[in-house]
Length: 233
Ligand code: ADP
Ligand code: MG
Image (cartoon, rainbow, N blue to C red; front, side, top):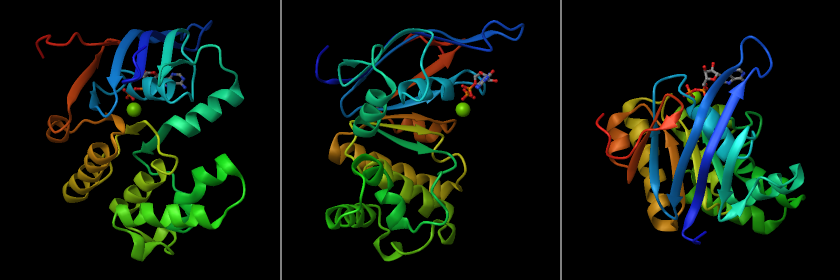
């Protein structure tokens, strides 16, 4: 596996409610490669399995079959502790509903991944979190609780948090789905800027065709598979 491939998915299959009458296969063999620094939009009808796929790529759920390689490392044989470590080191997450901790300040939220990875807080962590908040334009709001920020600001904090451990891949599930047009544009532009400046690959679920058109590539999930490139839409 070339080092320039951040994500390699091969033959990913996933069913829910296995062994019950409600058993349904959502993903029927998904193949996808993402290059280092590539910004890819993932589109597809509601219920087509986009979130299921992101959870599998994010090592939050396991496929029934197929291979997930992150930075060239096959995750199939890894135990929970190793998956957690790889997830923390290589992958950043941004969700539609930010999942910030509402009782924590912006600064504390950005520090969370570092605290989870390394245990106790130290001055270097605080400095890193401040630098990240500065990067997303929120340093003056560092001591605001998450609930005292606008939706767009909260999503910027989520972006800063996702970058804390310098991931090679960011997974974003409808990160602008809950925002007005102007905030959505600002959040997307920030993600694109981070992607260009730091070479972080991004896989972003979106229903927004204008934003998707500003990505390097659009892939579409149709009937549980990635639509063949070049196929008519
Ligand atoms: P999307 O994100 O594209 O809207 P999802 O991945 O959320 O699609 O869901 C794909 C399909 O899998 C849907 O039919 C959904 O109802 C089903 N599904 C998702 N999660 C679960 C679950 N935990 N248990 C059972 N079915 C699920
Ligand atoms: Mg979804």
